[in-house]
Length: 171
Image 1: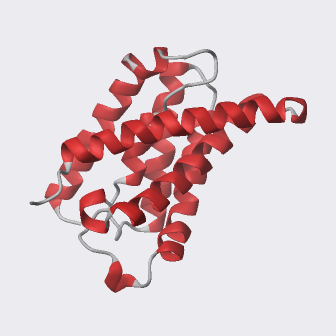
Image 2: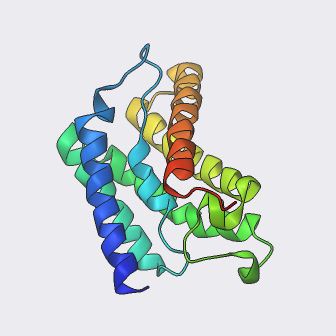
């Protein structure tokens, strides 16, 4: 990783934490939709990031959100779960290391199909971990499942909007 990549990831970390805490944490549509856009940070970490650094960065990202939202480790646990599955998802949907274009997994670098598989799977892993740890009751499985799916869809819309705004496709 270059120093430029590290610098942009640090900026992205702080921006996404503040955006989540100051704006998105106050959005609760119908009790079922809660956007967790801060996980975009984990999605955009470079391919070559060491596994230990991926887990540590994800833990501190989740812990930062937990501190501000008083969720007692739920975000940290969900972020670490997402980071743990990230290398497996990348290898499962890629045909090999030569198919990973660029240093970061973006829509422009990897293409629409690859990026959708990648981000949808990881967003679902994060949201399932978060919502089921939050409820921790099998009795509310169906309501939690609906909440997880709706929140994942809303988060994915934010991720895709960001991808098209920040990383426009070439002409």
